[in-house]
Length: 347
Image 1 (cartoon, rainbow, N blue to C red):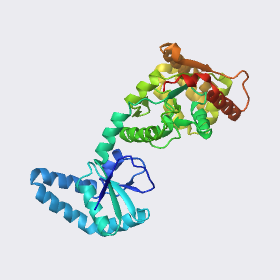
Image 2: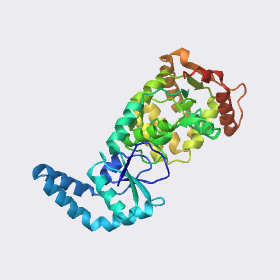
Image 3: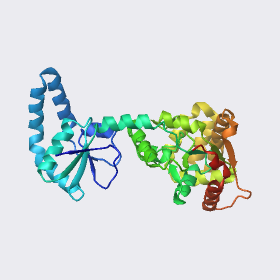
Image 4: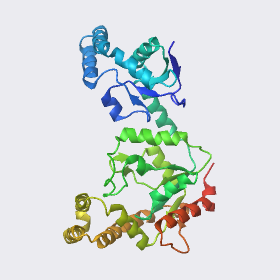
């Protein structure tokens, strides 16, 4: 008998996604392994037959497609299982997962099918994302090291959701340089949700201040609403340190990609400034380029702060600025952990 399990039952048993490759690519449960019952083309053909001819003919056509692959499914199921146990899902926990589940069960595996499948996973996530979490939002001007600070907080045992890390994008016109391909918007939602649901909601969760979009993906609306109400810690870093960080971060990246990002902002800078920055970039003079970019981004960031509820904001700065970037990050992380304002987060 195939066992139906709760969507969020966590264990070491591998999870198989038996939907088509295209469905999987659009969005899947993080950690799931793709083992498609049908290819994209086969799924399309079966669907067309179902609509135009009828379910009986579609079922027969599906058997014709699956038959030659049955031994492959058994082999992969055995290889991927954990001590003979396997979990799987399709779109609704219906025929596709039940069919592969039956086959793997006949091969001697202990099979579990997720109730309601991927659709139920998504519905549950959207409903529960609005549940309050003790967020503290980390803000600050471009180049102050927010992402690095979040990484240091993680190392110190704090709970962190790194939105930019999940999005493979740093959030500006230059944010995609040196990054892997961004996930689909649906998959980004799934990855954020997986981290969100695993958090201890009685403890602080640190997250970086973001606008609606990070590159091409969108921050989940319910999360963004909570971020707008949470305490906002503003990291104040000296311009010298910020420029040093950005030059090191982008200095080794292809000039062609940096130039393309500058050109995206040409209407903001004007023709003369854009041309000058491109010339300086080509000549390897990164300092004036970064200085001009910071002036632009600082102006926009300050405009956003001016519209932010001041009662939420806490300025974070060190009495003395260390020369070492690593020391700066560590000292700020320590200061944040000890800051009394994090106790104001509502339980």
